[in-house]
Image (cartoon, rainbow, N blue to C red; front, side, top):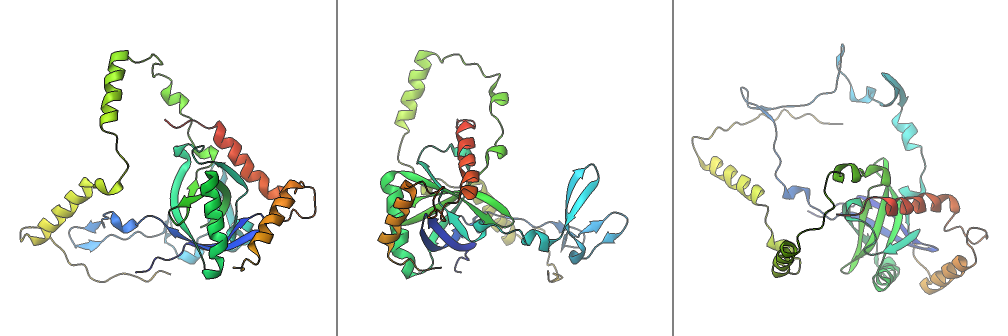
Length: 298
């Protein structure tokens, strides 16, 4: 089954816009999932939207509510939320670049593959990929997806680009209170030497295929054995399921040179600065500063 794109839009580098599509880089089907079963009847357990004192309610009657005080909510209709217009719904602009190793690992959230929409976008896509690789930099921008605006990092990955969503500074718990009771005393010299030697002997290039999910393997083995055993409890549930409701880049070299000239001539104050308005650059740069002040990776 072909993967389904999660987002389509423009990857923008100053005046250069590249039509791209985003796909999940991970497979949810690789992990085992279970369904809750009502043992006496053998039927799946369903979850229903219920209001206290009323009972089950229609899905169309549900709106989002924000609790601004205890038991007091301001209600928002889906149409009102959808009406919020963010440029990041359709455009991922790379507004800042940082060193490839500058972002602490705890900021990284989920990986996605970013691919050009068509053959016409390929040249510009390859230039951005190769420029990031040669400069050893990561591009930062923001992307609106599924009702949330994400901070995103774009880096080269093989022949393509990898987009990784990042956590904002306010989503990171401070490490200091948890590490406060850990002694700062230096380790014993001899013990440190033995540990360092052991690490050296076990050092090898990373190969994800050399690791197996032993728990998942054991679960699959257990399931297969129980399927083949006559003594195992099995049920057949009835089918009671209910239905639930790019622009082409023309003259890439010219666009890149014009972007460079615009940047050199103070883009915030001149008329040629449409690609990077100050109002859009501030949030991303603020997030960039917040990352540097966050806790360091262990």
